Length: 563
Image 1 (cartoon, rainbow, N blue to C red):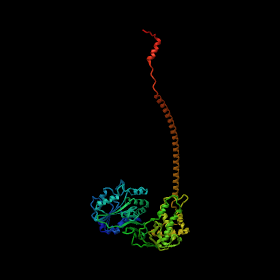
Image 2 (image 1 turned 180 degrees about the vertical axis):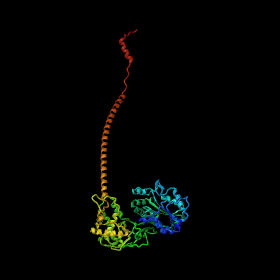
Image 3 (image 1 turned 120 degrees about the vertical axis):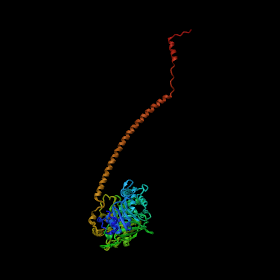
């Protein structure tokens, strides 16, 4: 929908009704604005395909707002009201190509024409903000997931080309951000400063977490290709210098009830590791609801490996069993006891009814970083007014982990695990196993917590835990059938190879017989040749003498007279 600029100049932006109702994803759509909200004051033009959530949020920030779906042309006269403070353009470069592949990354001359047309509508010190997808990124990510890392010299980065084109139209001062998994549903937004190997940030892990491909994006980051392969970009460009920005990354949590929605900002510091600042998405709302408080903790960025990654490695091997989870769980329980009970490895294990401080509620494995012998809990955001016992934290942490950890390997043939058998095996180190009643009670508490925080029911009760297989029976049956097919194919291939070997042997026998016959023929020929050569070596016989023979013959026929 296009709104007249003149009408918008005289009308405060916040009085404009949204053209479409905002759905549950409106807040997610507006995530892309978080790095650039400080530049959305004044007179703002939204250009291109604008989601209702973006339009609504921009209306709250801008003095006046204009929305246009059509891309301006350089040959057209600029708007009657010239001089926007900020123009935000969404996918206005769509239709260009990269190496012959259709996408939204500009690499041709038409981009320069389009940017010049937009530039005409900016004030001299105005800001142009581009949000666009990388059309080739999906193929690049697929290649990376298969281990086929793209070499930097293969082709020039499309983002590099865009940077140069923006400079050519006079917008040389630029800040670059890379949203994952896309600019339409950004969960992690990395700044170009965060991609530096000296930033202290594990950018590949953050990118991979947003797209459920942590290992693939880590490989890309290690190769230095993360920016070139990023699925989208958010570019802030201006002819005037831009203020320094020390943010390395933004991470936006999944949507919850409004009081608990959060944004985590990772901020570079002159000394020490980066700082993680967590803030409410709606600062004016209370942080407390129904006996639950979100603490929005701030802390230095801690080194270490998320502990679920170690479990993922265990479950990536074929033949794993429930018992393999016990040592992994023991490391987590050891960290819990040390952090919240002041207990050492040799101290007695706590009872499941042992009380823990309320802020330990989020000390689950995904919030545990292990770095050598050091274990650190991070992002302990929740605090309960009601008492928290050790059994609830065990059930909460283990169920959450086995639900979200990928399982690449197949369990042992005699094993058919459910979430309940995994939970029992993981807590075997406690000595006294959790009873069915104790597990059911903790699951009910957890379900109430999830409903308060998210507003949605989970339906994860004891019956669900006991009947749900992390590797479903149907999947196991398909795997068994697949293996049977592979075995049949291998047996057929073996039979074909045996037959081929027999044919080869028979052919070899024929070849050997033929070769023997040829050898005998050669021997006969060589004997004949030797005989001929021997005859040729003897002296030739003397020729007969005809005159003498005739004289002797005539003597018998004619009498001889002497005269």
